Image (cartoon, rainbow, N blue to C red; front, side, top):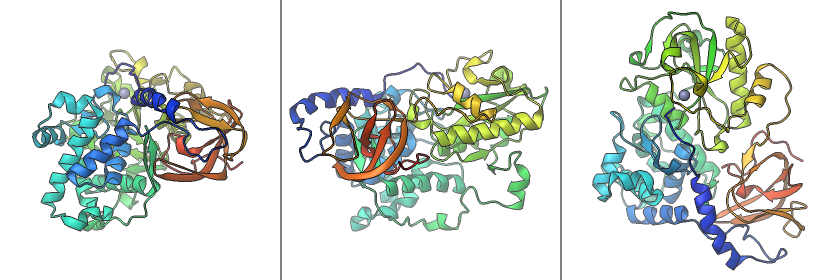
Length: 456
Ligand SMILES: [Zn+2]
């Protein structure tokens, strides 16, 4: 990942903005809800305005934004592939969306990178231009399924399968609906019209060649560009390095396939479900840790250092199983002297995996200890979110979460339906530390029912 300082989260900024509104709209506890948080966020407003101005479906814009950034602009800091903001407007040899957005909107690059509203507007302008070129006109523009090829083009992926990985993820998110950073979309049933991509085998399709290529049976093979690693090793493998991508899974894979990148990792792991892609054989030297490259195996984890919502239990468990396999196969001790963060290596200025990476939990998993649950497993968003004694709107309020809060959800159950900002959901999370239930709408995760959490 890129060198970065710890930054204030956009959601925190939005929550502060929303807190004022809440004071005016707070309802008694037994009122018809759902005003669990304040008014629509500025970011939500930006999506609405950009969708109207450029005739791009709002759900599509939000879906792309969630896939790229979980709707966090990281105060304008670049991704590994030099992409910026909620919509990841990029400036690299394969992806010119930033300069295209500047030309189409007349907005300066600085503003497009740092101002979330401008960033969303810029992406909408680019998508609009691509849709025009694809001949997407009139009523067709309202059909989400017809945008598939435009979404694939927006990713500027290295090849067809990677473009398909990206677009399929965006459509998966659109299907689930989004609730993050004060922005909501309802789940939509949509059949993507994949066009020419229908014949492209999605990544993960196993063939005899791909099965033979991987060192780890659970991995999907997808080779990095040969310009981005060195064949062979000059030292014995002794260390496994934990990275965070600073960008999306599809984006990292595409970047490592781009000959201009001059970087790679052996493995990349997806946040939502822990899917593992292998891009460089362990016998070869991936370029992920400068002078430590010759003796290390690098694992990239999808997400951002400052954004704990990417560090899912599914990703921890999948990564730990991979690390255990590498260590066992290569006789590497399963301890912190040999399983290290990028930030702990000599000759580097990187901060990943950062303070949100739970090393204690991870090392317990690596060592096959049945660990205590992680300290936190989800993050809430919004302000004034009520925690109740039961999964009912009439249940007494136990406490209120002032702003985005890291929580541990012990289990979930169905209760009263809550509708907020266009989304309805009857799943509620039981919070360990607060001793009550909150609606899943304000858990920073797109699924109505949270993955990996048992039913109470
Ligand atoms: Zn790194």
